Image 1: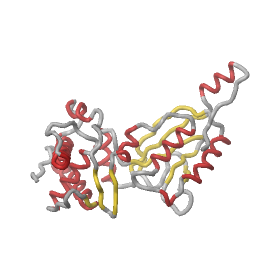
Image 2: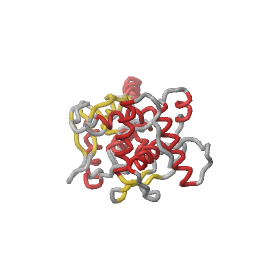
Image 3: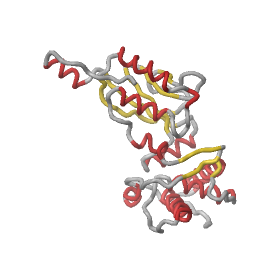
Image 4: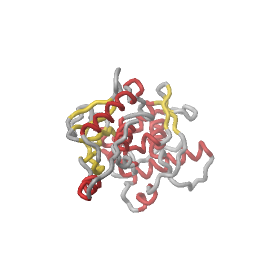
Length: 261
């Protein structure tokens, strides 16, 4: 594994240059695809410290990321210009001490390790690549809100999404109490918590979990479709739930009124 590391110094001036770093590193965050539905969903999820994001790392004038392909999944483009996704924001990561040559050596090794056929939507995607790349550049890990959805304990098998219970999402309850989350989102969180408690037998007033919003969307989708898959969730449930959320937010400022199960 190639890592960027500094050598010995012959003067205070060289030590100061090493501490300051050589090149700025920036992570560019995109909403996945150019779908306005994803953008709107991320506007909500972002408040809860997560989202459906594509991530890429800019260093020495190029942006590097990872995706599904036949060969190496590592690719580059001009900063903030990935054509497949909608740019959202940039996150400064600090300065790397790696020289351009060292960066190319790191990328040469990562091309071998990050193969396109190994891409997995939730377990090995562009955010994981960007996190690994930043660490090899000697920098901190990506902010949790970029990685959170991938770490939410979700698995996909045969087009069916399986949701697992995860640890409490820090700050969700506090943000809700502060009024930063509108009533429609809180309704989804509560519906998701009810679904989780019914499945796992937890206390009625347990804290919100990171997956509760997703569970609420799923439950809304199943309510709209009038189906129940005995704990399993089909992709169509998620899509139906998101469509219902967006439609009801567009036609009313009141909380989403969901039928009881």
